Image (tube, rainbow, N blue to C red; front, side, top):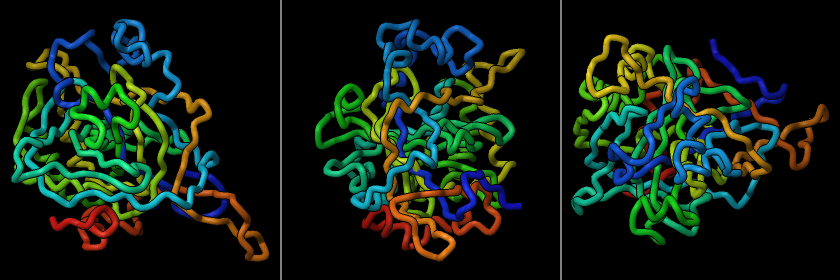
Length: 350
């Protein structure tokens, strides 16, 4: 049965975008600052991030923090927002278990395998190079995403984190500076099929059960993780892990991709520790709690007008519902690779 996030009586699809950020590969090493976790019941959890380390004060005092709940009633249509462009290139990458979450890092040092760039849309006039991909997920297919839609969370969220290479040389510099980072947020829903590229990464999780382990993924096609839509919501936010740097342009797509429950359960095997413990400490759930919007503007290119009873459209008003289940959905898991997907997200050959 199709599940629907209730928003209003009027029809129309809502958004899901791309863009999320955390900490570039040079920041992934052990021993930096205070040990942190996602469990709020323990010291070092999100409620303590801004208190335990001087480098993380934004985690408690910042006004542009992420993730947020994207409230459909707060959306502002921006007719100037163009479709996002994303290079269709294959990359050399590694899946790594950081303990807090798994991450795919992109090898950008090989000129034969350049990292893809994102541009246009809310990123204009800059280009952002994909630096790494983060994965946030819950247990048993519940409440795993960081961003939420009208306070409803998805089982999983994939975040493409990118660097503004027009202005900055590396992630460390970009994370501390204006227009430094992009975060592309892709929601993942449980469905009858698994997105082909997500399956490739999922199979590699068996090699990274414990913190510090890594596995090569030599032919990853990041653009195939994107849903088949041009619609998104964008806002100004932060990285979702310490130090919560407020330099991220977030893009949240309007549609999810899908994963079968059996494949999803593979992610729940990942653990926070470098070796097996008697009482396993699993990586999931690994989502930061929702942050205050603080009057930020939620811009969207979703232009769905609502009709009055007489059939005429109401002016400048939006009412949107997000269909979260795959049954009868217009973009089933394995259909994201069609040629029109390249047109929407980039113009390069795969």
